[in-house]
Length: 339
Image (cartoon, rainbow, N blue to C red; front, side, top):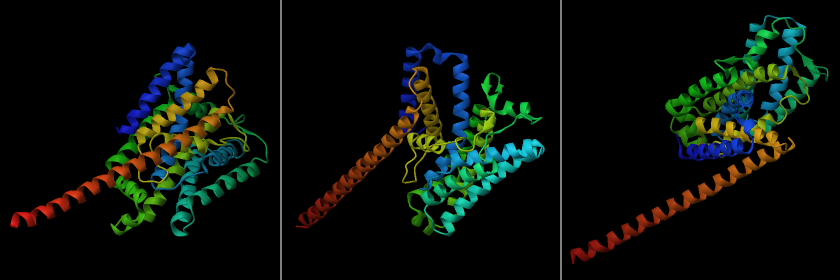
């Protein structure tokens, strides 16, 4: 666990303690289960967003992707009455393919990640509205709905299924990012893409794969969100959810410059954001403040990252200056000894 992870974990514990003292309902079984469920659904795609940020990119398309894939899920299950394993598999594959498309545009055409994912945000929202004919798509006539809805609303030994899946995916992502050669490549590309390329790293493939992971994990979350909401309203479903993913990653220690990030930090950041949302609800504060909270979190994360970078550069500069001074002193002493 990195130092940043310990710091944000302490903030999370303090916030939970304060919230429990202010409102005992926070510790109720129903509230804890619902909070854990939301942490699971938001945390899964936040890991993918974090991988993209580690490479120095950004993914703004997640929220619209949830709407588009959610509508496709409804169309496949309700309108065409296709077998649910086929529809779910198609949604997962499509999510990965859309991520692949983003990655190829970034690496092969040299388009900035901000631009292509912003286009994705607009494309997928527009396609969702078109496919749904600007109306809400539900699962009312789906014979397998109860089975599928259990994915989002069911529990395993009292623990929400999305949270259990988040723990599994989080453990795998931790191994990939922190204990594998591929993870070192991701961090190296984010720190200095040109240096990584000269070192023999296939930077284009590494960056593209990060977007594939983001799209694939986004598809997993899209399925959960669709069944959790019981329906998909294409114009608002998943709206601004991409900001939750970015905020969780930044809060968890991912630098928007790339080259730095922690899976544990992303998970704690996701949990902290959901607890903050829970705080707003339990205290009776208007939910519109959620966006103000996200903006504040991103702002604090960016400012803190800038301050830490400046402090690190200042320390490195002073250390280098001390080494140069010692070298000069040594050079001055040698002629005197020869005399």
